[in-house]
Image 1 (tube, rainbow, N blue to C red):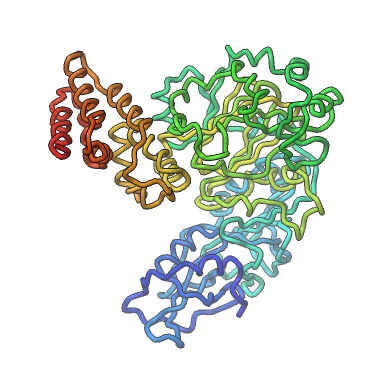
Image 2 (image 1 turned 30 degrees about the horizontal axis):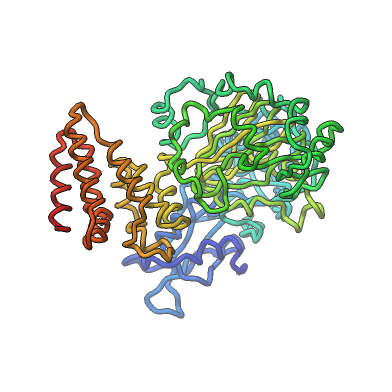
Length: 601
């Protein structure tokens, strides 16, 4: 029996839900083989089934009574199933993934560069004599969608595991074809993991061309003239990436952002967050004079800096937020959130061959990025991929100090050929001048400059990602941050969602030394201003009466003033006031004010 693989250790460390097979006597005659692993940890049957369906290498599971623990079962996971007993759950997936190459077999057909892995699965599945197919990972033609060749076989006599992710094999998870497989040659691979089943061996340096990337780019393009409402409903709310076209057509940046015009624009002694030469680690204090020299000499450099310092602010008049995104930033009113993070706007300038590591944007933020000059190659991973560290260059099989080029030429180039679950695969995007990409939170991605590139990007808190934004403000911010959002920015529906979230009441999560009942003068005036602004309708006298009554209560003198402030900020009373202000009849407004007056009188 082979020991549990890293994959299974990852799967079966999850806590058991105590869901066991009921009323079945499990058969011990199941033909165990090297394709079966027995984890040491307990796991529920239901959870094991769900995880098996997600795992590319899992053909099915079997649950057996544990002889050491009466009344409990142990799970066996299989990467191949020669037969299925009554006690075995067979995953509905048509193929299981095996890292390696079929050695001895009967070859049915070899296809050369005209078929994707997904198409190969359909092709093999439709032919009853097709047992498996395998392909090399690296494609010498640098074609991004299809392997260089795919070999289909009608039998498997032996299999050679591969620890460097140079060959990949898919074996049919079909009992009618199992007799054609020497299953003693198959085993659970110790190199496969649930989150990232493919190795990241960074050894190559040849990058595909702009034309090759564009040929596989299927991202939807839409006009930047789309309304804010339509953009939110169709893209932000649905968490759907898209490319906006023409957002920058009237920007001054169109004329001002070139190496020639940027060089004299900034003080040579000013410092920027950048890299110079082949050192890819960003430094906080690179002199503009050194950057300008790199521009003139056409030597490698990369700027990724916020626009919050004196020199950076000079660029603010050159651009504006894309129209469909304007007004959509829930963080927009929180100028100091999060602390020391800045305004979340970034100036991106770099020579060809520079790029980012795989990463997920922070703080629950969506992002937009507009290219003024050059071309960017984006690789966007499925939502299933959440840990960017699984994508980083593997020290065991990479060059000693891999560069960005090594990663893109070795790992990124194979992304679209790397399936995760449910057929989801990463996709390639070529971003051209005048295009603005929108990327929702939660998508691991990487970006490579194909040539000299100048761009502007920003992160923002979208209502489409409301739950994550509220969680971030509550857990990473201070009390004043969530108060400002809840009482001054959120509408009635957003406040309801905040109250129904697991992060209500926020005081339970905010680490703040401030007494929860203390309200400063700035808070009072902000809320007054907000309440006045929220009053709607044509009845000016009603609006004035409501505002003046509340103002009189809050600004009253005497010992009861603290009690008045507490009453205003009491969650239920404050909510009834704000909700009342959205009632056109104003009846609830005045009723709420009388309630406060009664309590503090």
